[in-house]
Length: 137
Image 1: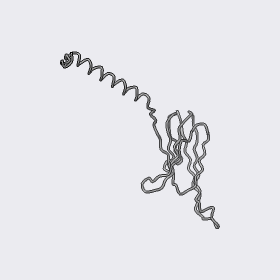
Image 2: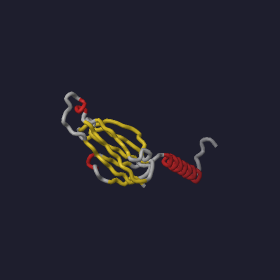
Image 3: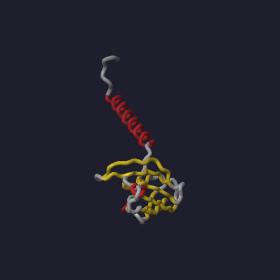
Image 4: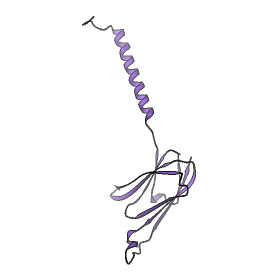
């Protein structure tokens, strides 16, 4: 039956099957994508408690010009993913991306030391301390 037109009912069934197949494919692809929510922490959150979800991401954003030591009261509660440096609002910032891996309450402490304190003579610029309390559920 070459060259014959396809009956309208058969053409409609083919289009319906194609749309159903496309919808199923989109559903499967979307179901495989990992969705992760994120929380930001910075100097403005010093002393505050942040409620976070296990499986979410925390981004600690601090001034890049200091040498930072980051400590957690529970080292199994956070998993470091990346540390990057970038410009935010014209300021150079260091960003630690961490996954929340455990429920509970824990403390994250960031201590920033000015590099000039290692000079001879050392500068008088003070060390900076930030303390963040995280409540993970």
